Structure formats: structure tokens, C-alpha cells
Image 1 (spheres, rainbow, N blue to C red):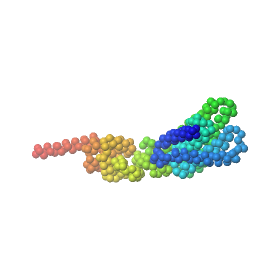
Image 2 (cartoon, rainbow, N blue to C red; image 1 turned 45 degrees about the vertical axis):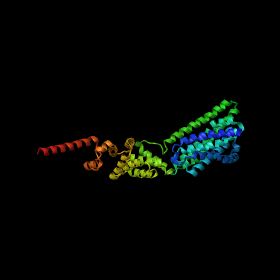
Image 3 (tube, rainbow, N blue to C red; image 1 turned 90 degrees about the vertical axis):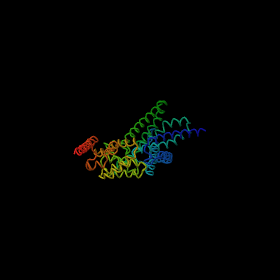
Image 4 (tube, one colour; image 1 turned 30 degrees about the vertical axis):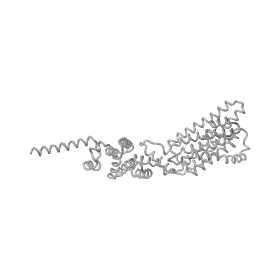
Length: 403
């Protein structure tokens, strides 16, 4: 009965931690990594097998150096456990090609750490009881997750650094990424031994362990937050379109079929005035999700007018305008005003999409009157010229009547 209770507590705590990691991975559907944290959990559980192998190897290599709790936990325990978890993380990443943005290394490393803690919690729970399992689920499981998450950060950094040019430095840093995490792990484990050695009591022991994990948590959170701004999914304002284009192009090297990145790249190309590239991305997105026909018509029409195909582009935008609902039309108009960089093209879109302007000034009439480049004149100017035309017609009619 006690064994069943320990397993249930461990399963519930692991499920909650994985649910939280899954929540942090906002674009997992677009990256096609929906179940990667659960695969990481399995990889972490399987890392127990190489851990025992590394225990034996490290003891034979470094056992003669061990003369205290810290060196024992650093050279034997920390090296063995963190190396095994890190190797399983590397294998998972390269097998599933699961790193699509920088913070993926942290999330997937944390999932592997949760898997390792799953086994340890059951093991120590059988020795010390269910209460120990609850304490370890709250205190030790996050520690294992954070240690492997930091190693995963170095792995993801190496993957991203080698996308465009070969970066041997980042690769070597990634190879030995388990060393700093083994050091933190050893420091946490040794704190328990020191508390008993110096007879400082359980409260000191608990406080020192919590402090070490708290500092590690702060470091991990800060690293994760800093990586968000370097993610290809980071939403840049359209005024920073050049920076956004560079970031998205790097992300597409790891995830070329991403619908979100291709759509955003098309919009940033439009904001940068690079209409041929924007047209290619928009047509690619249309082929992937053709159901939003009106939106694609409007965007493709703008791109066509941007490259000089005015008649073809106008036909698409006009068709989109007629099919948009009232609220939808004004939303797309507002969105395009923020997206389009060229001032002349902005006015043309406004005049086409705004029904009040379009009702009184049809495109072909204005094109014949003002020429191919000046048919987007303002409402007040057009109204004034129309009134002048009507007054001239009225004057001619009166002159004919007087004769």
C-alpha cells in the first residue's frame, strides 16, 4: 500500500511539472514538438542506466581524490548523474531535431531532469516513506530540472551559433556543459553532509539547500527570459523589421515549414518594402491555410501593387473588401496601416478598403483622371474637383438654355 501511495505522489508531481513546462512552450504546435516534454521524461527515466555505469567509471578514475563530502558529490555523484542526463538530452535533441528556438534547450533539459527525479523520488520514498517523497517532489525535483535545464541552454546556444558559420568555441562549451551543473548539484548534496558534520541542525541544512536551489532558479529564470528576446517567435514592432527578418530567417533554418514564421516574415518583408519576397511568403502561407481567403487576397494584392502589378493587385483587394464583414474590414484596414511602410501604398489601400471613399470614387475613374501614380488623392480634394465639374456642367446647361 505504501509503495502504491509513493508511486501516485510521484506521478502526480511529475505530471504537474510537465504540465507547467508544456505551458511555457507556447509555439509547440507550430514547431511540431507537442509531446517533446513527455519524451524528455522517458529519456530522464532511462538516464538511470548510464548513471550507474558512470558511477563505476568515475569512482575508478577519481575515487583516489575523494577526501570529503563535496569532492565525493562533485566527482562521483554530480559527474555521473549530470553526464547521464546530458547525454540523454543530446540524444533526444538530435534524434527528434527538437530545438527550434533558443529556450527549447531549457524546457527539454528540465523535462529530462524531471524524469531522473521521478526514479529517485520512488527510490528514496521506499526507504524513507511517503513524506520524504512529498518533500523531494517540491524541493529536489525542481533542482534536477534546473540543473539539466542550464546544460540544455548551452546545447541550444551551440545549435544556434553554428547555423550560419562554424563556431567551435560554442561547440566545446556545449560538450562540457555538464561540469557547472555537476558543481551546483554537488554543492546542494554536500550541504546536507556539512549540516550533519558540523552539527548545525536540520533547519540550517534545509535553509542552505533551499538557498542553493533558489539561486539556481533565479539564474535559470533570467536566462530563460533573456532568450525570449532572441527567439524567432519574438514579436518585433514593424519599425524594427530588418532585425525581425534576420531573426526569423535563422529560425526557419531549423524549422522551414513553420507557418507562423513564414507568415510573419511576409509581413515584415512588406513593412521593409521588399514586396517580391513578401509575395512568395504570402503565397506559401495561402497554400498551407487557404481557408482565410479574404485576408490572403488583401495581402497578396498589396504585394502585387508593391511590385507594380496594379490591376491584378486591385482586383484581389477589391474582392477581399467586398467579402469582408464590416468589423473585419476595418480591422484589416487598421492592421495594414501599421504594416505597410510606403506612404503612397497606405493611401491606396485606405481608399480601396474604406467604403465611404470607394463609393464616390471608383478606381478606374480616378486612374483615368489622375494617372497611374496619383489615383489615391484625398477625399476632400476629390470632392472639391467633383463639385467643380458639376458647377461647370450646370453653367454650360444654363448657357444652352439661354440661347
